Length: 93
Image (cartoon, rainbow, N blue to C red; front, top):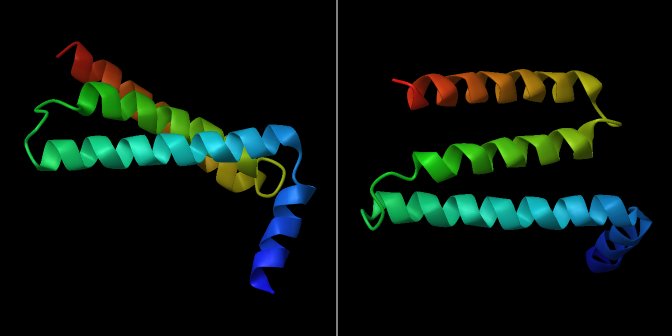
């Protein structure tokens, strides 16, 4: 029963929201892979890749949740701006 309910919810989404959801999954998996690579010391400095990917993920979340929860989306935008400012400051340090 749950599988059919999930499929019905998926079919109700617009093609744009389906693409956003798939992009969120891809970016999330990429972030997890880079985090594991850094924790296992395969790659030393992943922050140059991690922070832009995190910013893309936050933008995708804002787009997806804008109609449902504008206050939460605005909070995510503030977090995004904070992340960008910190990464720029870290870049020029």
